Length: 193
Image 1 (cartoon, rainbow, N blue to C red):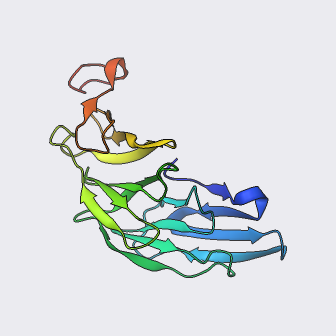
Image 2: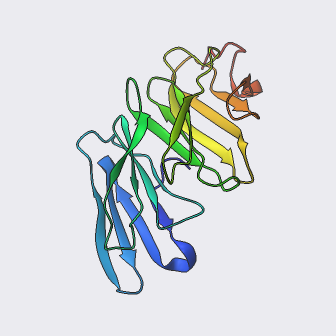
């Protein structure tokens, strides 16, 4: 999920819990103590997207409004945050985050304005590409992104809003997209209840 309420690091080394507006806490088993990971960035959404890197659970990604941030030092009493260069929503806020396992460190993020981005080498110096399709709904809000953990080129993006086509998939890392909403929509154009 791109909007978790909790997460567990490798073999239970640490547990993460969050509340609204990006307040994230860490319980470390070795010290049996709670630490603050994020104090709710001022620009955070009510339900703030964040996630542990599925390959390195010592790294977390957080949507701080329009800016994507990374914390690579989680096990150091909550660690510290840095802005990821180029990982900024051009308008609106970051509304969804997802990552792959193979290959590692590929991240996708979507925005409240319906844009989708691919980030390669999210763990180092990121390379960002906009992969928004002209077939995406105008006024769509990217509510979730799912990435096949074994194939980072295979992704599904969902949009929430009234009267929009809600599901699109890509099997080539966002170069091409297809509507996969099928009978989940009342009408083929996304209209209806």
